[in-house]
Amino acid sequence: MHVNWDLPGGYALKSVSGWTAYDARSRDWITASPVDSLTINGMTERVGYWSQELRITSPEDRALRFIGGAFIDYYDMHTLPHAGDFAALNLGGSVLPSVVRGLATNPQLAFLGDLQDNVANGFATGTAEYFRLITPSGDPVSGLSNLDQAIKTWSVFLEGQYDFDPRWRLTLGLRYAEESNDTRMAKGTLYVNGLGQPWGSFPSAEQISASALAADPSLASWSWLLPIVYGSVLANPIGPGLTFKDIPLLIAAPGGTPPARDRIEEDHWIPSLKLQYFPRDGAMLYLTVATGFKAGGFNSSNINVYTRAGDTFGGEESIAIEAGGKVTLLDGRALLNFALFRTDFEDMQAATITPQGAATVVNAAQAISQGIELDATWRISEALTAGAAWAWLDAHYEDSEELNCGGYMKALRQAAGEDFSSSPCTFRLDDLPSGKDDLQRAPRHTLTAWGEYRRTLGDAWEMQLYAAVNHRDKASTTLDNYFWAGAITTVNARLALSETRADWTVALFGNNLLDDDGLLLHQENSGGAVKGIITAPRSWGLQFVKNW
Image (cartoon, rainbow, N blue to C red):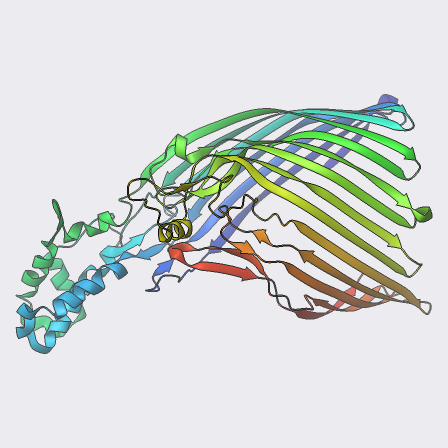
């Protein structure tokens, strides 16, 4: 909602109010494991947000003009699973097959004859659900959420423009902002087995026997023997003071941690300066210096015990310098824009891996992003317009904290002879084993060229032909620069016919006409797999638009 007030003296007051609330429901089903055993829970994310801004502006017909005001917003998120939905990890797939084979080939059980396999499979039947780890994101019955987050931001700002004369303008701006992030989260709570019992519960030999008999009545003649056989497996030592029934606790998090609440508070002064020079009508040169920040937050994906040091990360700060110009040429038929820029990042936030293998965000590095941008548009004739844009980018890390290797990097370095038995595998972003220090998703060159032809056909018809070529250099797709996406070139085109009196248009369009299948994403996946996502293939479409 926008409300405007005209104040005396040509001043104006404006209020901008916003509010939104929604439930976002999702469900993922992942079958990437060799035994097809992993599914991810369905989750509801309940989000509420509101904002309020008040700003006052001075009259525009003065040498000194200003805009000032205040802003506040509030964001609240609450997650919980759908009733009956859960994440299930079948940890028995790595344990039970070998146990079954051992029982089925044990010579001491050969007297069972054809039923030896049944007895062996009966053990898996009676214990399988105790190896299935259920990890809900919360409790849909009680309403307990594994993640509640409330973020409040408020700021005051003032920006003034002063015209020294018709050719020079100075703009100064200053914003002060405070943000508080109040988060309550649980990590790995509510872990249960496939029967809904606390994780780590394990059946007795008698309970396993009962389950085996219920599933396979042919074992009834040996019902007296089953507890003896299964009891010997349960008593089998697997380590000092540990028996077979302790395995579930050794291969998964034992119950997680209770909800913990923490709060991050940050404040920032954000100044900016812009100097503009107008050498003639239709031309402007400028120099801008500006600062910025990205707030810190919490890592909620790690299943380990919550710690402030490991699960909070601070704000990222930057300072940017840009110089350039905007110039009209050829009596207004052409426009040229150019810019040189550099941004220095401090405490850059980066997603990395903990020693336990969980994704986490840390303030990892200092970095620089600098380059050149050019774009131009030329009205060649009444019917034909063409344009192009080119950018050169150098984005690299300058300094870094020590980060933990992902599985792919560790495997490559071990294959090259490095030994991590006594020390962890780590790396620095500014001194990577790959020899590259590029930021992710930062291609060196990007280029776009386009053309549009419009022609009137009779009194009420218009034809439009548009075509564009887009090119992007190769770019790193992972933090450690081991995986790259190659260069991509796409060609798109559109032919449209419009009837201007009835205001309708029919168009034939084609995207990626060269059918370039270059990689958009290329990275390591779980379990040591490597995955990639390619560009959308060549596609054609027929479009009809009617306006009333």
